[in-house]
Length: 421
Figure 1 (cartoon, rainbow, N blue to C red):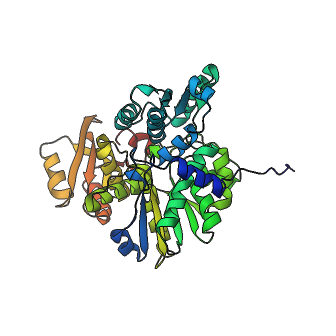
Figure 2 (figure 1 turned 30 degrees about the vertical axis):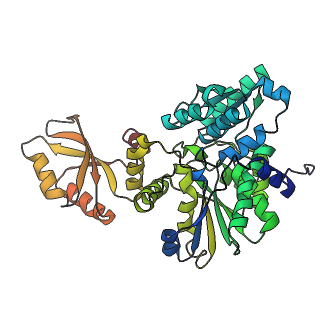
Figure 3 (figure 1 turned 180 degrees about the horizontal axis):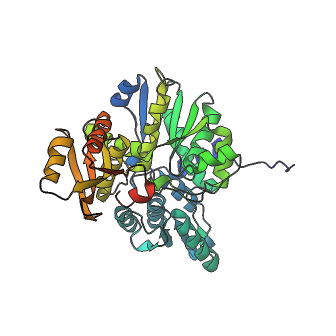
């Protein structure tokens, strides 16, 4: 039997001190009533707009609160951090404001837009180093430099001062909404935001249910809570880059395990559809991690009727070059985009027959890659089709088979499908 140890939890006094430290640095972001989602779910939905921070995410809160606490010796030795993007921007701006030199390690796939933002906010106070494929790769490189050169490591989530900085969001929400809050949906990556916010609500609004939301491809907190121990995932899907870590913070896990009402995951395709909906219907630009809390509403549709609900919109650092991928993933999630191997008979008019007799009047060919003859009679092509109605798929496949065009369906074959999307 293991001995019990007292785990860290932010005190109300510490969070209030952090709020004072951040005064004039981090914006008191709006808590906006949202008509669209309120009508859709028959409840009262409020959006905590952390995407409207100067660095376009809540990360400035934790980063600045931590760096403002450094000693003169620590400042002289400089700082180092690792980040998928948003924490890096918070650290970069904090470096400039506090005049502290910093080295920022970022995963190589980090969107170019985020890298440019880091350099813009940090100016001549920061150096960006791209390394590895995931946050964890960047983290190990940053820790190595921290140990070798005695630089202070500014952790993106597993740090008391960082947690207390993120917790100030909870204070603001409770000041901004006087009516009782029934649910708060909060995105979870490493757990700094969820740990801090849930601690404030536990002290000041204990009846509020705090729901943590992770991407389906990176369920590190969900897995850890299910296993009752902080668990490192072997592989993760990096699409929701602001919330994709293999292991949550130890401090954060201990807090979230006690404070969160539930942890849930949402499909990356639903994240993409939410991003498109917010942009097209409400002119709100958010990044994948920023959409997580809104995606969770569909899973709680029955429970939240007539309730007061807050969704934390964590950031808006979305790279416009990802738009095509976002649309593709949304169509796949909606069962409107499908990839096939089509066997075309080696005769004149075969393609015309496929278009005129097999495709429906509203079906579109969006991808066509002719490979080579598989035998004397047939030639294969990889074909991507976009449907207007998901229910048309079964009829489409039936027609292909009846006319001997059907080769294979690729959507449910991940080893092949990864080369197309």
